[in-house]
Image 1 (cartoon, rainbow, N blue to C red):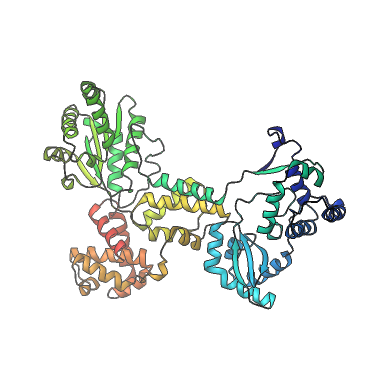
Image 2 (cartoon, one colour):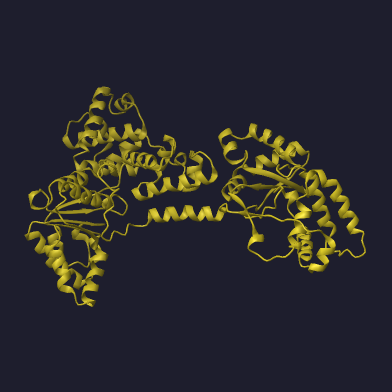
Length: 571
């Protein structure tokens, strides 16, 4: 967005001869162009004329008048060559890539010493062309021009626009011209009055964000998303059970959290709940979902949701302000539901552990609801007193595993809907196949893609996803086969391959065999008939039954879900 800014209303510039002369050189109306050129030639011949305007400046002024007779049009003398070049490139380069990175994205600016100079809309487009399309462009230039040219780019971001002047390379003052212009603007008012008449001058104030500013905004969005939530006492109303994606890796934690929100405290089944997982797998989301559920169904209950670190800071302030009794009274008399995130942060904090121990005992004895989260199970937290670890294990301890491929894909689709962006399934599949460790990272990848797509004004495709997210190409990985799945299942379950492929009806062998079938169907993409033939020429209906059985049981059987997930991530 550009606006003409009336500097004359705010600055005491007098006749503003410097700007007037600059305007007279670069912004002449078409009808008077010829007359003004004669006027400049006449003035150059006067003995009193200062020679600060060099020959290069006169060349720039003449070029500007002849190259753009209509100041509302951006006419480049290299446009015919550019159009012919694009016609050749369109036949050489895949059409979606051509329209995304070349057509209306780069501009031919000039030729010099067998070097063809271009400008690009963004740094990303420039780097993509230099890395991927430079040989194609140079080859087409050689065909078109009859000799070899090297490709180079100029930086165009942040240039000041002069009204009525094209922004092509031919209209941009060269170093000699800029030096002459600097000398000219340093002339005294008396000399300027002799050299030019007074004219009204206007400047263009460019408010469009630069490429660097847009890139910083993209990075800021991603960092804000990836940074762990600072909970404090605020419950996020957007984290609910409705937008939590359930899969085999988290179905038990989800079901337990729902039960707690329905019947918290002594009236429910789980007055003490402990959730643990690696970072970014949904613990915090479930914690907020429980808080929102309790607030909706039991508005009379007082909920305290706080991180372990904030709990410790509050206790320190209570000691400092000599208000320890108020701190104790708040948690023992005013809280019905105590939810502490990242309880492992209390390790080696002996005074805080002492107060937490007494608060836990008091609330548990009164039948209040207690919920804690951590990155590891209670028995594996170091620096925590044994009596506290024992109490954390009193209730139900549930772990959340890494999501499987189907769950990761569902998470991406849900996030794409919330961001209101369209992404093809093949793009979602490559992201889900490459990012396996964190839901937060999965969602952050879509935020990055959305921001870059808006910056480039291009559709998100597989190549863009690989370039921006630095994803490894799944085509470069060893392909999973029926044989590799069978060998991996054999190693994991310690069952010989021959037994897995046999018709043995042993319970352990049948379970491992059905898991191998399920992975062969979902990951390898084999048909039921192909799986049946590989496993001792069975009837394909047996394979269908086994795959469906694993799909249903993994929703409730946590041990089975772990085995399936481990094998999927190992292949």
